Length: 153
Image 1: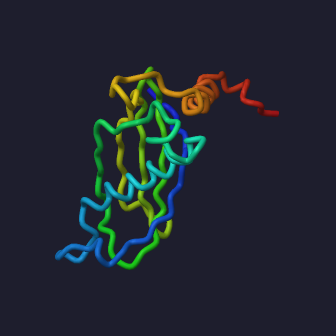
Image 2: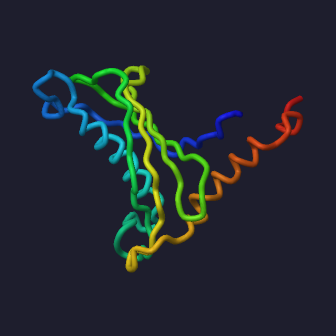
């Protein structure tokens, strides 16, 4: 069984701050979740037509229902981070997101979270918006296509 493809949707550039460190001399584990959150919010804000995904004209939006992180190598100050965000196979109202936290091309952590789209007034789940779903369906279709039909010469 092969892993379903993941779609790269956003790359966030962030800086490790001195205050991110703890008494053990490395970035505190809670900050890894903040780095992933920042990447996720940058992506969500970029999706909103008016740049305001949770106010203004927005009636639906994603909420996170769980999150995890696997710490591979401790991060230390100073450093410039690259946090990549991917989306996996969508459901009707939710999609799994995946993250890699990199510095200097080396992976320091990987994480995941489940996003559920909700009606902002009622809090009830709603279908994933078309602008999120369309590229995921296209990726899935390309992955499912027979190898001879992928445009090879």
